[in-house]
Image (cartoon, rainbow, N blue to C red; front, side):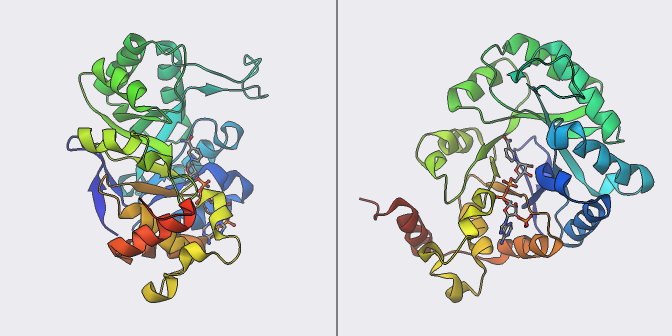
Length: 290
Ligand SMILES: NC(=O)c1ccc[n+]([C@@H]2O[C@H](COP(=O)([O-])OP(=O)(O)OC[C@H]3O[C@@H](n4cnc5c(N)ncnc54)[C@H](OP(=O)(O)O)[C@@H]3O)[C@@H](O)[C@H]2O)c1
């Protein structure tokens, strides 16, 4: 599978990324198998967050890295910080809230390093825009982690264009992605300025829930009527539809089934014709473009 940079000065990731959010629902053996199959398919980039699996998914993935010393250099690790919620693992959190203080970002990144059994995180994201976000503090936290070599690149998730631009203005290095929800079920980013900003800045977005959490695949759908023409499955078409966009979208697939990793990887070979792309857009919008 092709690899691409998310920004001229950013990290290089596999075009399709494996998301570990739902991996809490499967055994450690399956996590190992999903990782192995991903690598066989050229999917070398893995998307985590401190909170996934009630703060346990990073640790389980880290056990793989601990027992296989050559694995770390074959993969790229993305993780996130900033969301806190009540959990026996985090008794200090009374309610769901965000924390993008310098202290928490540094603590969280260092904890992720420990959980993942690694000395570096390729990309750290602020998980959600925090209404109390102080860009000076974020810049200090990012600067320190970067200078120490603990985190190589930084980005954000679920930020609006103005939130992205505001934070970028306080940093001396580029934010290298905005990880947002984009799919045939969530087409707003194509029209609301999210992807325009990415194109303007030369930053590649990442698409979470690119199959709308599996909802897109439920039942017969006219949106996939071009499937036979491409000899592609519905999920491959849904991913190819995102891959076609010039902003260089990196879809993050969330499956817990090894065979679906193989299926998703093949989406990079589906080169959708422009009119078929608009045909799929038409089905989800319910009308042609004007
Ligand atoms: N930054 C954020 O705020 C944020 C939010 C949500 C997610 N994420 C990231 O994005 C990743 C992907 O999110 P997601 O899991 O919602 O993505 P998704 O790929 O849209 O959905 C995966 C779900 O769809 C199901 N599915 C049903 N049919 C499928 C098919 N034919 N092919 C593949 N999957 C099918 C999967 O079930 P099976 O397991 O049975 O295949 C799984 O439950 C997460 O792992 C996480 O890393 C980030």
